Length: 107
Image (cartoon, rainbow, N blue to C red):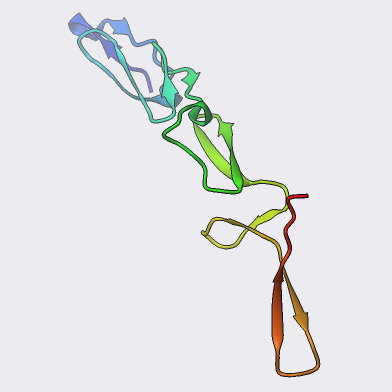
């Protein structure tokens, strides 16, 4: 996609088209997609340094190109869409009872 701006659309926008939502037709100002910033929308926003994107308990933030993800800390697992939890061990006895033991893996 090639964006232009100005009188008779004669000037070429310098926006990084991959990271840009639009180029303002009057002056060529770039409107960046979420996760991008800068004059040309070519600078990644480090969401991990922004305090509004705090990962849940027992996890840490990893900055990605234009985004971020939260990964569980060592010794913790993510079950479905819930938070990271300590590992569980089920102990089965030859009876009707099943015991679940939570292992504290912070050591």
